[in-house]
Length: 402
Ligand SMILES: Cc1ncc(COP(=O)(O)O)c(C=O)c1O
Figure 1 (cartoon, helix red, strand yellow):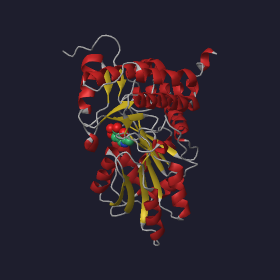
Figure 2: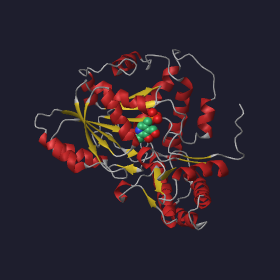
Figure 3: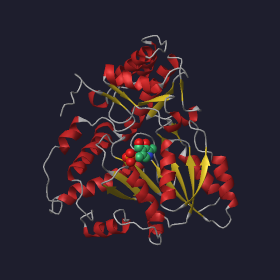
Figure 4: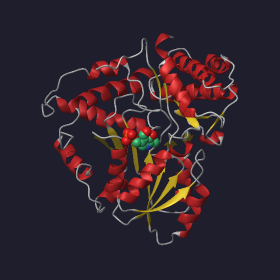
């Protein structure tokens, strides 16, 4: 390999894949073992059960699948829907766009509610459509909770309210790929029917596990859904759950040990509540830095602020891709590029997963240097100082050191 890594740590501030913590790396650094041994179900049952805490559910059934977020989308759709089914889906960024593309290719009939990139889901239009659907022909409403391309978080409690007020029985399918495990998520309270995430985001694992939770209503729908599915067929998993061996194929053993370690860090060491508070703190600090730089974020209203990713809009004479390029070439800092409609216009600071205050301040310093390098007249230290002021106020003592 002739790839020479730069000295020191790489500053990985893309909104996934995120940093993998040392305890997780160590937990995964093991040989293969027999997944049919009497010892293995102890691990598999514990992760299948504990992962539900991230989703805010005790009622749902979880499936841990060797796939990515894209596969988790497919698992959600094909298990509860039949070809030709009407679904409503929101479009407001690259990932909602890609999910809709998948829905179309799976032969569902998608009614798209589109908003500007930077805005959240248009719930007034959803309400009108559901109220007018007297025959209940709409089988599912699909939404990306946190649009990673624009830094927009949608209010899922409000989506649920619209469904309830319209007395509409459509299933609610939620992409939580860049939210679950980092942002508040209440699958049971919001009556989400299928929620999903991927391992390389808030869980701070390598890419390769798709985690899908299905409500009892979703499991019921799966009994009659006619979409062709084989690898993703929940019925096969459920059969194996009864047998006690969990996977209908060879599971990714090392990743499951990594998942166990990641869940221990989130649920036992730090506590999910503290993890969510930390994401909020780092996001607020980032937003204050952007403001101090005299720049705007892509997110149009504070109610949609994302606590896992901030998309920073650059002035028209600057190409945001050059900010990302110089940050990597000169400072060993990885920022997210602008995708599709916002390519060249925004760069993204991912503040998701296993990160702390000083890491963020280092990254913000790197962003300032990079902005100056590409000709944006930022005062060095301005954003860092604004973020520091916030973090000094908002950061609690480390729980294990009080
Ligand atoms: C919100 C969202 N959904 C889905 C995906 C697709 O996930 P994957 O790349 O793991 O297939 C991503 C990836 O970044 C994402 O951010």
